[in-house]
Length: 179
Image (tube, rainbow, N blue to C red; front, side, top):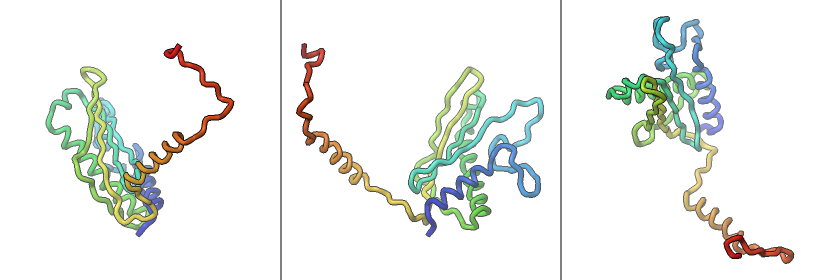
């Protein structure tokens, strides 16, 4: 079992190593699997895409964003391209995590598809934002609270306000509606 904090630090370092323009130990451009890694002619626009990683307890969320032409949104292959990009990012994170820590990153994709949203800025430009959640396996050091525990904690806190005595010197003035 590994400590969740050590796992998160390793994954964050792996994600930090994936900056645009990063190179490998051999001096080759780092291939993460994003659109920006593909060769583009000088006359073509620069491809804008990237990813980020966030954590909630033992759940890791891989966020992905990409600029797309509005006519690409109408094709059926955009969804598969986005899902493929997120899987390639996850694969990159696993390899990089292994290089950094020497341990294997074990995470299970949570049920449900990749969740995405397409927004448009004009008739020509749009962007897609998507994410996929993974449950980190073999982590210790994080207590997962039961939803009922949280609900009861909130209820007991709210009850404290109902039981509180009002100060003796408080003057209760009628509100504007009561006048």
